[in-house]
Image (cartoon, rainbow, N blue to C red; front, side, top):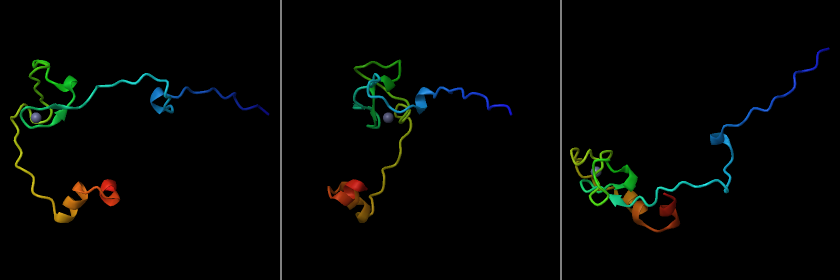
Length: 93
Ligand SMILES: [Zn+2]
């Protein structure tokens, strides 16, 4: 009888490995830069390369103001309550 072939460990790709807190963490900083056209929040690194850090412009939200959406309708009262309240049920929502 022929013995089974030896098991060869297959390396696990890094993306599938468990998180190790000793790994360096990449941070983009705060996502607190407002698009001047639509008010969407961005990271500064998302600005268009032709714009400056002082007057950043963004293309991925409203295409530099070229796309304008109509205002949203008011939420139904039940959803509005869940959206704004601080109750455990609303926070879970
Ligand atoms: Zn925008």
